[in-house]
Image (tube, rainbow, N blue to C red; front, side, top):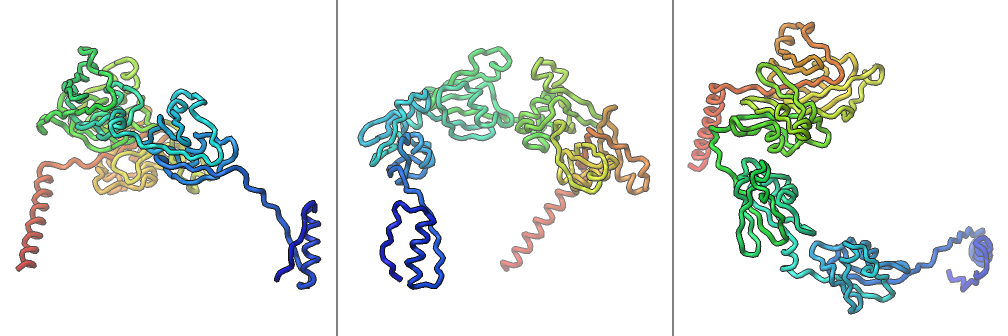
Length: 425
């Protein structure tokens, strides 16, 4: 329905609506007209290509800088050569702005500018990387902005793996092979054992060959990066060695109240005291079958919504070990040991319900929940108070049980093989 051109310059929005409605009324009964204004797009189009995440044409406002345009394009790729960015055949060393905040290296982009971010030469890229191999947590290639010490680079890879040979770490740089005695650096016998590493270096951390007979099983649970059971050197492993092997404590770990559970009971240690003062009594030697519990810092709890928590006061308990959802929980003030285990999802199939450890202000007590449930002796349940740590150990498998389990596995494999042969026949 053509109504022709309507001049609205100088009119208000209401006046424009009325004028357009009057024209439409010749064709439509009681026309309803709405007029809205759209702001005219300003700025200009800039083109950026090369080693940016999303090369394209972008509309940008006046006074947009190179850094702002690169950000709009998603940033530089890891292969970008920031020292040789081409703006209309003019080379800009953008790295001076990134590293030294020199504003002249971050020019304002003009209309119709074309920006090319070139790819760095592979030799130059390799010259700023470190290749880390061998007995470390996360071997791989790491970018470094400037030279770093060997231990700082190992930290980038999450630390050493299990049983590293710290006395003979191999370093390959510019076709020359060197050795570093990090073990000597750590014990003070070799101050040169933590050398500064340049980009383009390959580092290999060898591992020690350990006879399994020389190791003992130690279990760590709670606020640790990789809870589980680890084989550590017999007679040499200390608490700090276990935490290091298990990836270190989490950000919520209370390393001042670490508990070591043994057959004869439990004992608390302040590892922070060892780290700050070197007191070896707070970094004890570990024994076969030890279980190490790392509690959560006070206040870092999982809130469990329940009727009890709404209608009564609450307390905080840590439930660790062989339960389905270990952690710290805020529960009703009158909740029992059994309630605490239920909040943690219940025990696992491998839980030893005859040796549950409850650590309180006065020490650690051992509870046979299996006996209490079998005999109905709920009066033997300890009173759970705020701050208590409840640990459910896993069953200790006897040598005879191991033989039975392995025999059963072998029997299953044999029967499966016979079944496959029958199918083939």
